[in-house]
Image 1 (tube, rainbow over the protein chains, first blue to last red):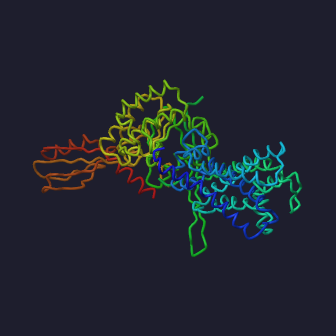
Image 2: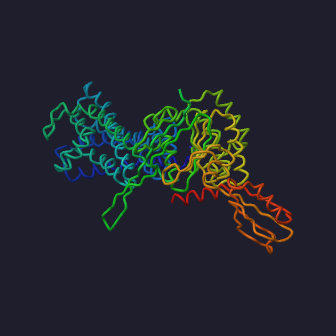
Image 3: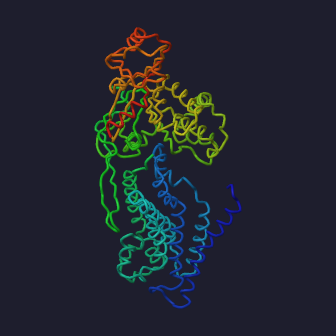
Length: 248
Length: 322
């Protein structure tokens, strides 16, 4: 908290970014009544859920993108010389408080969207409203970790991780029905992004999937999040063992 | 039950290097940085680990500390497998990477030590006792200065402290005197001498500064191209590589006839033959005999005998294995 003014500006800017994205969605619906078979209020639920999942994951594990610097410069040596989990140390290297404002804004967007959308709030749906952001955040977190780990194989991994993390956030902001087949299979089912916001929103709205997925899938995002986290941790372990350090 | 702290057999580490040839094509090749090292280090030893740049010193240390996974070979440090049991091992070892800090850049030194206490879960009493000892021995009068503002000499003393604060069984010092001025070097060496004489910590010291080794280490391991080329005392290194002493004799008058002794060569003659420099192989002719011979042949005014410089031996060793 050494630089208060700069921190305040950071907070404000970070809060502003998701609002701009909401504006984009609203503008889109000025020209078309529905996107991929979903109305404005329905898409906003998806959008809010996606933004909240991503913001939570970003606060918790977004620091992992720093791994590139640690691998390039050999700073990882010092991390590995301590009797702590390497992943834990990287995540705790910096607590990104400024990103907390994004969580707050995303939460507000989701609450407003759920209030406006035709959702009958049963206890099961209320539970889903709590579980889905957590499950989605775990899934995003797994993508963050797994893609950042690529730095161990490929030092100049650059934008590769961002394509899947920020790309995933944008992908999950809209119903998967709007995407082409190949893209949908790869992102929605292959990487599991459909489970972040699309299926939970279907369950909240009580709609069946226009693409014909069984209704039970709508409730299954926690079931997908756990194996995703396990896969990410295995990839991470492999990555750390591949670490080659730098000459010194 | 052995008292071996480090046990390496046939330790090897390869690096895959991919080199660009042409616009898109890449050629992959394998470089062996450490090529079958056998090393046994007993508890309480202070071992000098030496080699030219790129010989595989740092790679070995990184394998010992669990940072790098060996490609092949058997390795136990404190009875543990370094990479798979990295966290358990990290509790028992300390590391100073001369070029990379273990300290927290923005924190006062005192806070870095406090963090280390939590990370290694050192009981507060032990921590306080050890810290007091290091503050005294290393003259750490700058505990409240942020690490980034420390001079290199101060930082290196701080690095040594943080590596030893949890009372490790083995400590790896990778070039701890690199870039230090004479006074700081002396301070670090005095501290390491003290540490050695206590005998409860095993020390593996890599350095390019041979006077570090001369003063501190009874045992010397020299590696080159990833292989051990010498493992023994400094004396055995001299004996093995035929180190020669330089004998400079100053005479009242030039010698009437040349000196003829086995293992004695005249290297230089100056001041009209009144100052003679010989190179002497002590195993063939004792220095005393050369002095006696000189005194018999002419009137000797002064004599000086220079011990073989470890630098020369090492330089010859590196050149010979290249």
